[in-house]
Every structure is written in C-alpha cells, then in structure tokens.
Image (cartoon, rainbow, N blue to C red; front, side):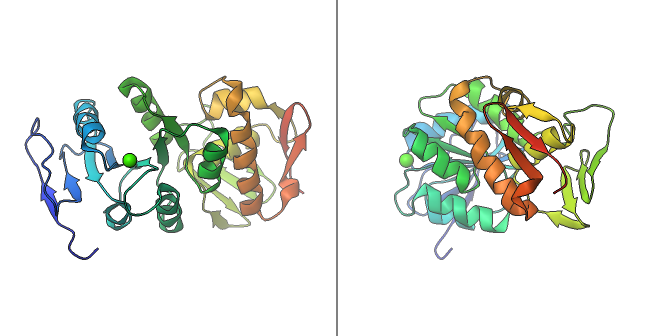
Length: 250
Ligand code: CA
C-alpha cells in the first residue's frame, strides 16, 4: 500500500499509538497466534488489542480496509464490516482470494442476511457487537484450532477418491488438494467420519460450530453449498430433508 507506515510497539503494556500514517500497527511480539484486527474505531480497537494481548495473542491492527488487504499474513483475521474506505465484505473477498486464513466478521449488523452473505464470502464465523472478550477468544481458538479431529485416534479418513487428513487439516480429491476454509474442513471431516450415514444438523452445529443455537442452522447450508462446489459434484453431500446431510461418493 502506498504511504503505509508500520509502527512497531515492542514492549508489552504499551498503548497502541495512533498517528495519521500508522494505519497498520504492530502491537505485540510474543510469538503466539497472530491476529489481524481490522477496526477503524480506536475506542473499540485499543481495549480489544490490549485484551487480546493479555490472552497471549500477537496482534496487528489495520484501521482501514486497504491496510488490511496489504497487511502481512496472520493466523486469524477479526474483520469489522464498517470501515471508512472499503466495505468489510470486499476485504473478506480480497483476503479469501489469496489465503484460507480464518476470518471472523465483527459487526453491529446482526441480521441473518448479513451473516449469510459474510459466510458465503468465506468468513468462518461472525460476532456481533457488543461481545465479550471471553466469547471472542473462544471463537478465535475454535477457528484457529490446529490438528483437532472429530474422531480421536484416526489420522485420516477416506471416502472413495476423497481423503481427509485430520492431522494436517487438508483434504484432497483424486490427489488434488482442496482449498477449504477452517469451517469447511471441519464440516467435511464431520461428514466423512461417517460416510453414508446421516449426520444431523444439530450434531454438525455442535461439532463444527461448538453451538447448539438453532438460529445458526442456515450457516450449515451455506457451508454445505460451498463444499459441494469445491468437491465439483453436488451429489457428494446429499441433503436429507428435515434431518441433516449424508456424504458419499457420487
Ligand atoms: Ca467500524
């Protein structure tokens, strides 16, 4: 990004500095999970940066959409939807085009339609302001979980030409690796753990989204839709009306 300055703040407990040119501020350096916080409002961003640092995260802040798109890679992106320059949805699309970094959308807008649009664009989760730090941290841990597997003891799952590598969190079809978001991978792993069996929506909500909140059921449909596209054949995931989904070789 032209004119983008990066301010490094190395010492812990130092407040995030604000200057007209510092649209991207490196705020921590403890080698933990690196979070990119995209938030234009200092009153929200500053306490959040400090809270996340106390939780052991390494936090970069971008105050504009342009700075977010130009930022160095992170392990998780917290993306405010209302930004001064670029719409948060466009930032999500741009980030998703080049990486599968977990993205949590943060917004005051909580309507179902926005949530679905965000998830269709490849966001992994969604929180609505105001939210508690503890809830946010739990969601960050959920989307950045590495090596987690729905079935302990198994390293990989095979369904015909589909291989799901639970340790490496990778999936391939006919030897070709699929580019999946964290939630798409978890969903595929949950379905592939029981090929041919119907997995209920409620089970998927609990296993993949760690919630039993029924309002999120539309979220499953969005992720199933994108998984079907990535698998290249919608018959891979069959909808069992009123119950859930079944994965099998077409
Ligand atoms: Ca904002």
